[in-house]
Image (cartoon, rainbow, N blue to C red):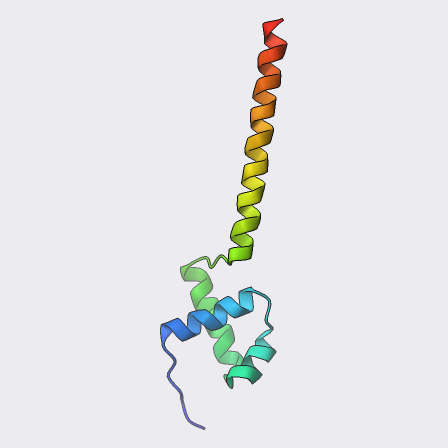
Length: 84
């Protein structure tokens, strides 16, 4: 069995695919990488950085926008209530 060297970019892409929902087994079969290697990469890169997918970013962005609107409504209501 040969020891293949994978660059950091490739490893991070595999970790990103896993975070997005692909199983380690599927990644292992598709890319012909041992599951052990993938688990090591997940452990390594999860500590170094947080990988946010575009979907996750959009969800957080929408929630933030909604919460800002709610705060604005509450400020307006408070202003009306204290004006009386």
